[in-house]
Length: 132
Image (tube, rainbow, N blue to C red):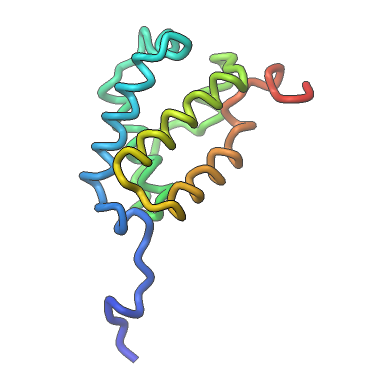
């Protein structure tokens, strides 16, 4: 049997439009985050060109696109920042809001929300976890 486009499952990444759509989402997302007074301070001394590139690569992987991410792990990058769960939740809200605004289908939004839940412990500092 030959594999045709009809028999090959299409990734979320392909469904939303691939690299150009991910790049647009990352740009809009960081516009929202940097305009949020509770979150902007985390990025004061951050190379935002590099930061946007890292998020685009990570979001590509989350959506089932090609894995070209070779940066630090989530915990290594975020634990030293002492991020509270409230700020993690705000970032998640901005990401879901951005994807919703860009017309991303509900099942893809649900997948992203699941992944956000799965990686929370790697991003939120141990002392700021619920029940800690």
